[in-house]
Length: 53
Image 1 (cartoon, rainbow, N blue to C red):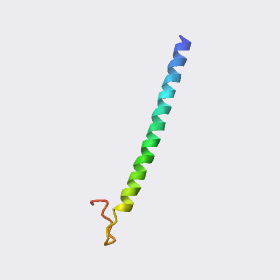
Image 2: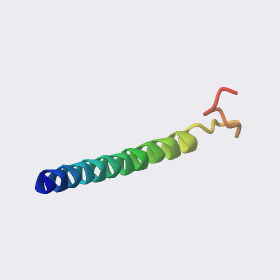
Image 3: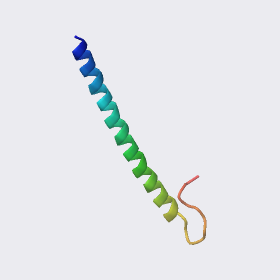
Image 4: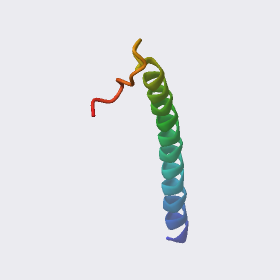
């Protein structure tokens, strides 16, 4: 029974580690897209039009 509990904990930790790794990659991609949008959002008039508010 102890071995099954240990195996379950190991599988849970592996799943959490994979999920956190995936979230870090997604955050980096979204940050890069935000930076590109921030840079391209500036119009010829110099006004920042990336955000609507």
